Amino acid sequence: MLVKMNIFRFLMFTVMMLTLGVAMAGDPAKGRGIYASRCSGCHGINGLPTNPAVPNFTMGQGLMVPDREIMNFIKKGKTVMPGFEGVLTDEEILDVIAHIRTLF
Image 1 (cartoon, one colour):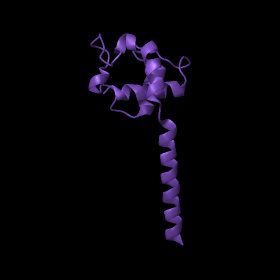
Image 2: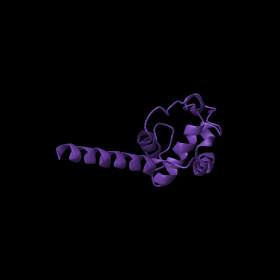
Image 3: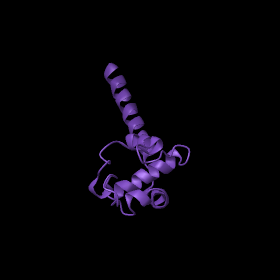
Image 4: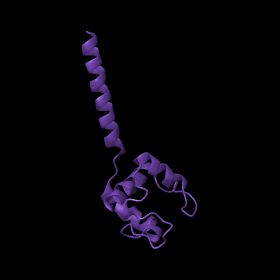
């Protein structure tokens, strides 16, 4: 009985984790337009920035972290990058993240 309960818990945990992953996924097609209008001025239309202080997405700079960390960075901003909290929804930010991950 204990083995069956542990198997059930494991399966439930697995389903929850898979569901969370799907819920966090953004749509790169939707993110492309948002990126073009909000981000490309500094980060370049194809992820290659004109300013060397800005991450180069074509080389994966700034992308080797979980989406949640990138989302928080986009919301809060840092140094010359403004925060987009209240400007973009969480869904829009996830869409942008999905798009920039296609640039690498």
